[in-house]
Amino acid sequence: MGQDPLVGARLLRKLLIACTRWNVWDVQSRPLQEELDGLLAEARRLAEAAGDEDELWQVSLAGIRLLAWRENSTMQEAEKGRAVALATAAHFEERGDWVSVSAALNGYIVFSYRIGADDEALEASRRRLAVSDLPVTERADELQLMAATLFNRDNYSRCIEIVREAVAQLRPGDPVVHFDAAIALATWALFFSGRWSEITDFIPMIEDIREQIQQGVGANTHLAGCYVCLLHIALAQEDPARADVAISVLEQCFSSEQVNARALLAAYREDDPRYLDFEPTSDEWTFPMLMFLTDRGIHAPRELIARLRALYSSLPVDQCIRLVEIAEALANSDIVRLTKAIDEAEAHGLIAPAARMRIVLARRTGDWTQLEHARLVLEQLGDRQFLRRLEEVAVALDNDY
Image (cartoon, rainbow, N blue to C red; front, side, top):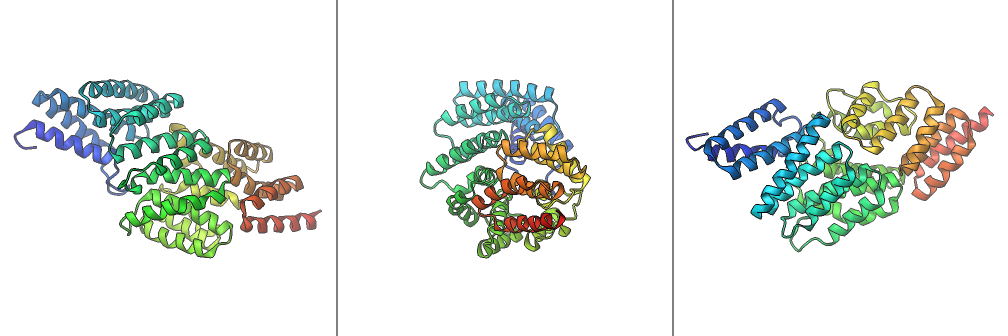
């Protein structure tokens, strides 16, 4: 780091922030956790050698982000991270450094969510929102965290509402691409909650994001999430033009190394679960893969279910919990558990997936009431793809009985 320890500390700290906060590396090329820990230790050593108090606090901020970025942090580490984040926010508030205050609160929110303190996370999000003159990147980050907290608590209506409000209030010149993560969350909220007719309101935003991102392999993953939803709905509503657009974008978004993503796209395109050969060494798009299989009554691979169970054991995401429960009940042919899991999924706002699963349940139980329940929802969604499946099951039940 040359002869000046302060310069070295700043360079390492900025490198850590770039990696852990703004995700400048993709999954395949980003540094290992051990490498980042080493960078943090060296940045702290250099800041101490320089005797610069402000830089020590900035390094502390980088440490908060590094811990927040680590998926397997313990509850004790998260509690400690919350305390450090609040102390760091207080320091920068005294200095009037509001961008750093916002960044520290970002870490506090992540840790709060990790330990289940959702109300405190939302309150901290409101505190960040009240900070004036924040750069667009900080405002977008605040919106993403608030939307994620609401989404993961299955408060889909409020998630959609705050994203609509925030995008409507964008300042002139603010690139909408910075809000891609929040818009993707709102898109998924519309999908899960069965508000498919409102997806058209978000399509112009999504297309603006697409225009603002340099297209090519490794394109933005949040954009891909939006288009997975659009593809799912277009295929369900048998809208080939919109489906072709979504497929074209996703082909550009998914790199050749993303084998699960490529398999998912092929399965959607051909409406054939045989394309979904789950590769355990590749961890992308596991959740949509699970939904594609269970929608069609296919037992998900044990490795896939285990991967998602491990995810929500450290990061409780309600819809993941509900749909993994459905997948496990289906894999175990446990009809009582499956019935309960579908009912609970619907009660927690997963309207569209629950409706499709009722067709699967009816085929296994011969329960016509499940088909009629599903029919009402699918007709409201305009899900012609699965209404046809429903009629196929109805014919099969007539033949069986």
